[in-house]
Amino acid sequence: MTRVRQVFVVLLAACSFSLPGAVSAPEVQAEQATVIRFASLAPPGSAFMKVMKAWNRSLKKATQNRVELRFYSGGSQGDERDFIRKVRAGQVDAAGVTTTGLGMVVRPVLVLAAPGLITEYDQLERARTELGPRFNAMFEAAGFKNMAWGEAGKNRIFSAQPFAKPSDLKTQRPWAWKDDPIFAELMRVVGANPVRMGVPEVYGGLQTRMIDVVPTSSIAAVAMQWYTRLSYVAKDNFAIIVGGSLIKREKFDELSEADQKALMNTSERAARALDTLARRDDDKAYQSMVARGMVEVDIAPHRAEWNAVERQARENLTGRVYSKSLLAAVERVAAGK
Image (cartoon, one colour):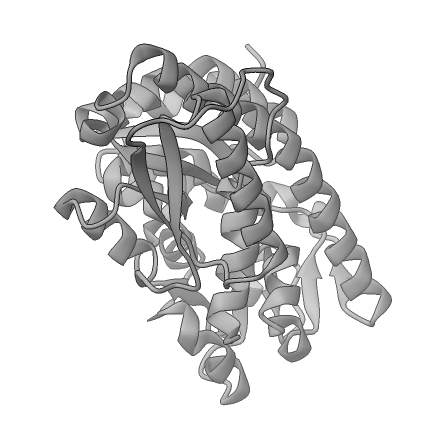
């Protein structure tokens, strides 16, 4: 399995893979099931695909075999950009994506990944509860239904070179994903020139020193083996990686009201259970890297400087990625007001 596949397995598992909920409906043979074609990057036979298949069994039982999931695994349908394109074209019906994929459908949702805004899990939970309906309405207006929110660990700054304050990154070469405007803007405010490349190119970029700063979660850093080329990690994270499971609204509308409810309920229960696993595994990965020699960088002494550049980046993205009112709403929720 390639490194890009490994990282997406981890991220999409944390963001969108569902565990079976307890149901008691009798299982009977339906004349013809409605098939939901679900794109995933998890490899066939993996533990994650076993979970997906268990979710399918649960859904089939809850709907008395009227609805079933058919998985296209192993990245056979491409990556997140391909997933969204194919769902729109009707080539697949649903997909698991991270924040980047969500932003391809509803760009303002990227406000949840704005630097320094949502950094703790309780903040994310409040945002999902209070602002989830607002974002979900945007997905529906775009022709999608968000079956469940997910998360994939804390987004931290990793580096091959020592750093502590924002200006230390000026002379370094940070990586920014081609489809991610958030971290790229943060680096521009810092004064660094982000190197735009796809995920498959990152490990090679670290080897050749084309890049030496990477924003990612601990579970991704371990899964991709990026940590073997990096020596420093910020103790404080600047965001949490958010994701979700999207289905084309037209496909969702083919289901009866009862079957729609069954699909949404099993997804939601599963996603919340998986949040606990994702948080645990991300923390384990972080501790494991530190134990292996990764240097923790305490940026607290320079917190005022980091706050300033994060705030400036958020403001610069206002009007381009999300509205001023939406940013204010998320800031209020994040502050617990």
